[in-house]
Length: 491
Image 1: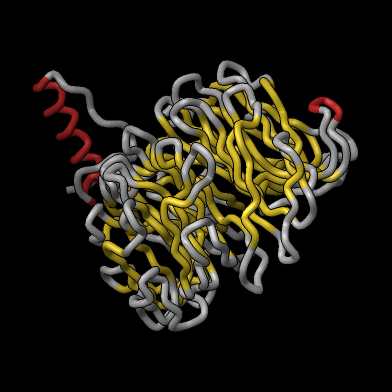
Image 2 (image 1 turned 135 degrees about the horizontal axis):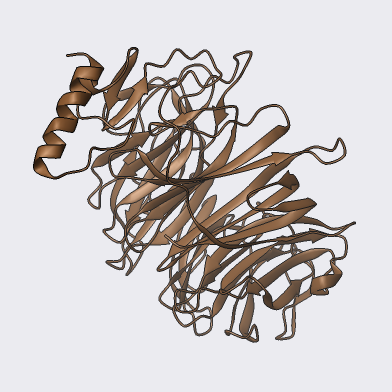
């Protein structure tokens, strides 16, 4: 049946049933699509030619993520970096952490780390706290259900976060603490590193009021030295006392996040080849990524998964846990890789991926962009961050250029005056993109344009997104250099 005949038949059937025909681009079978198109999970898409310039097919986005508010903090002589963002489910307030080079007079901050709380209604600052001895990449924050802010960061010099001087050992210390809802320090402590590597947090999450921290290096949190190259620990929110801690031989952990059942999801890279990612020293993987679920009582391994194949996973950038206990992980890969299902060939160049695992570890969705990064009119997209909201919807954030396709949606073009673009999308269970937000950036006065340092957090009623921004964009209406961009969306 031709497309026109299928359309006429569908319209007649819909009219007889009192229904409304589905919009252009939706389909039940390939017969509903045009020449050169196929029906892929209910969306008409062109067969990809990998020639660039939107050749990956798909349909133009029709549902755009509504932005409740956005703010750009920027000033001459100030350069922002972004490390973490969180949100208070009760008030919608956002907390963002990062680092500055140079003075930022509006917040009375200068070079060093910072934590700021922004009003949920419009983004105005409620309070800002300097962490002058902290640097970019070594500060993490998390919010508790009571609206308090947990923090973890690396200090190499004597530091004071409002509770008195904390003096790190020769190899630096992990500074841990808790702020109340008004930003007043409740407690802080220093935990010296015990290994050759400087101890640094890779992630921090709230397990109730407790701190779930993972990172590089080794330390004695009060349960004995963790030993290995990396660690994961659960610490009391009352004073930082050790509940349990474990060391891992693998040198790269990306994130630990609590699951609703009380256990812990952990993900990272298998580095070096053959290193154990099991706190008990058992499970190993030769290359690629690992995902493990640890007991919330003592940190022992409940189950673990790793990738296989002749290719390898080259980066693990983020991990998130759904209300169901399912796990999503994003990163980059090249060559032939299996995430527990069929083997996928990423080719010789690194490509981004989203992979999900069920609550018991079964392999789930695998999503990749359709791109042409070396074509004359190139298309490229990266997956940098992921977050499940409390309704179980999965959100992705990253960067793109040209007009790549993800989940059947051909991105809004970024070419010509558009020098860089950031994107946020909601991933439906079938792998399509159900809601989309592009931030397209042009240069100002011949300067560069970029968006990086993406961080993402989702909770009840709020999607929080922060990034480092340079250039000019129209939606949101930002113009600035090396500024801190923050957005609040409602899922």
